Length: 160
Length: 291
Image (cartoon, helix red, strand yellow):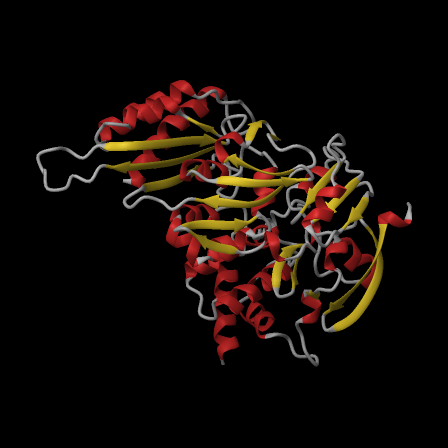
């Protein structure tokens, strides 16, 4: 691979300044796993449909499987690993535990990060807004009713 | 995916200079949400991608323009979905955006990429065709305006040259009382690509003081997408509507005309015969819901 096909990138990852050399065709999902050992965002469909690889780029949810790592240069990235502070789970994580908003947990990081974007825009979301935001996240265990209850509980905890 | 050269120009002039008129392996890229799946499937193996993400502000923003809209090609679909300006001029666009793919894709995908991709399943081309929109395309040779009706020539084929970029989209001011709707029919899951997309637009004459004269449609536009190899206007349906009253009988006549005129393609979402019937149903529904 020639130098033109590589890129040095620097970004903030869960509050820490980091850098990496990436191939132009690598997705941010691949780089998070290979360079930083972060597996919270994980590939499932590989087409942006299922939401398992969700991460926040400058506070906005994106599909990590479709997002070139080179495009993350200069951005602020948040993965599910960055939510807990000082050993305390984030209120959204607590709400998912409290309401059992999962079964196997494979899709849970994606749901939690979509919920984070939702609540940043709609602190008191209607059921319709919750469904609208989460319609692009698939849970093959079909824990959907508990996930929606968890999102409502998260909104309460975030306001408290 | 195979590796490729990635360049990130800072100006439009630099960007168009990096595109190649005769090399299909060189493409502009913005959000990348449509091209990455094609690259993963090895349907598209670029030698060079010209990223537009570092361009100056020229291609960004949602602006009001003479009562209509000027939409930067790099505006994300989320920006358009949330824009009060878009909602005021073209509420049919705001509604169509709500069910276009999902929040994450809309956060990243751009209007220019959505149109330049030439995929017949995209939701906005039929809507913009009925709104009378035009795109401004730029290249080393200068700029030109392309009517949305002339943009997509075939399956993933547009009239754009390989070294042309979409800079912006103009949606003209809409006449008072124009009625619009976009009907999206997904035959598989709710979040699938549409099996049939139908956009309709019509306006009626103002009955004024003469209440004995029935209201008739003075102009009508019907566009069908997804079932066809490219989004198409349907003149046979439009002439069935023009000069007639916007009533159930007229709408049925227009829906029949559309079903007869359009050539659907068979694929995993249904046979050509099935799609023809779905065009009949959804043209009628779109007209009813526009009323």
